[in-house]
Image (cartoon, rainbow, N blue to C red; front, side, top):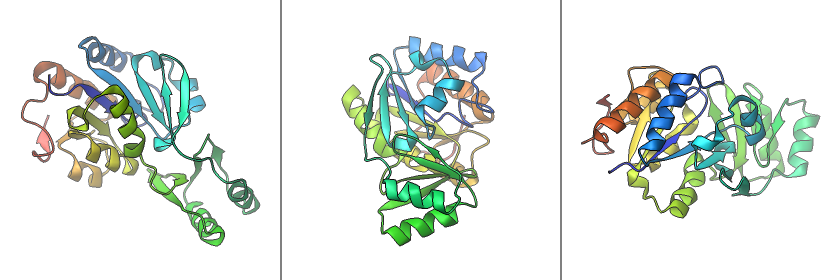
Length: 233
């Protein structure tokens, strides 16, 4: 077995309009039953995710806040991988009227408020960066990505990155796909992500993930990986 794990984004990938349907849950269960590990890698905050997705048990780890923290679902222990947002940063965003959601580390808002966020980062001299996700805006310490969140998880699970399939749909999934041995973009993914992917599914979002899982179970994506560009599914 070449591919030992699936690292999947949530919104726009396994989830459609914020929820995961029964057919996708069944596909994830089949993949887990094959002995492979499931890892979620999402920009969402954990508590927000809990309100829409009750099946944390399917995943051995959940990398949340776009790589800022990791939940071990077996022990329910959460580990921060970077520092929380400075209070002065949050206070200044509030002063500027920026609507936001605060996670353990991540600061989330929407376009066009990224302009005020960037100005605040500049004015305070912070080493933080802005990540876009189809109209959503995530603010994190410099260098924090889905890949930096997934990498220590793979090391802990003793799974080489080249033995992982990564699947996503948006700007913040570039780093995820680049880290994994096989990068997959669902049909609804941004064109820039499709160009970088090893596979582009024919189905959108969860339907594409179901197709991907069926192919993994059928032949372990034989002959497909970073050496093959935009292979048909």
